[in-house]
Image (tube, rainbow, N blue to C red; front, side, top):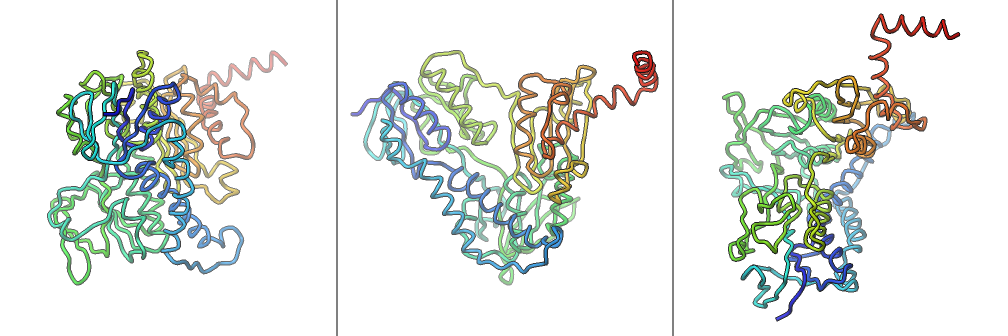
Length: 475
């Protein structure tokens, strides 16, 4: 029986980080993966979706040629070629996750279905291995909602999208979260008729309402139809079309399409692991861990989607770092979710850090809001991308930044300055007094913080008079 210092279950972002971190410090490491290294992010998530979104963006720009002073042009393409391009990118980036690369590092990469036999042993396809410590990072999968007739009628998920050979003429998207919104826009730009069904009364329910409404308006202009506050009840097939029977405001209505995309959330991959054997507790949300990411078994840690609560690649990597500090060095490292950023890669993009306005109200905070429209940012106008705004929340008079939200072009890039601001407790004054390059979209962030001074010094009549007097006296 082989014996290791650390065995990592799952070869996604969290697992690869944990395995490489462990082997670099001289430990004997095994990495167990069911299928291919790279995980959901590489094959069915971040990489393929952003590649598809980029191709859809090019289609959109070509259709808008006249807005840039160019002649209108017809756009033609084979959808199979677009998917082929997606897989070319996946394979290129996948070179970084070649099993031989990790084997050369010293990681023993094993493919198979692992199951715990005890707290120190697992079985893989009939063979047992032993380890002092385990890291579970088995990820998550698309959640299938309990809608009558859905399975019988058939549907696709984010996994199936990247295996399609033809573009569905029409598609119903169930779920208006990040995946639903990104794919809705991409398919609409390629030419599908898209209808979005969402139980909540806004798209992207975790965002501030003004952010969601702005994005909804932009997507609606591209032809996407929304039915919010809608519950899908039944699904059936009729005359070659898939019919979704819904309930909205107490009334039933029907939606017809050639295909149904389900994007209602994720479910942790815990099946088959036999977590009862080592005494690892879990529920429908995932494996239970403390702030050090240790499970209810003292030698087993867990990280990534199988733990949550934030199902992002960057959070999986962050959590793996916490596990390494605890498991390898016994440092008292704990997770801190106060500053968790994310971006939805629609066009315009939506980026988020810190408190929303709703959360600030719920916490009874004394806060101010400063908003600046992209239509007032010179670089946005030069690129004919004036939709959206930058929104910054800060505390009362001090101006300490506690949240920032952007809906607009390149929001995912612009948010990083504000992530640092929230993490380090910077104020709007700190950003306003920092030189920003002209003409850039990032200058819009500084212009947003400049509003603080306009409010403090120029909206107050008595203060403005006092400043004028001081200037006259000094000059």
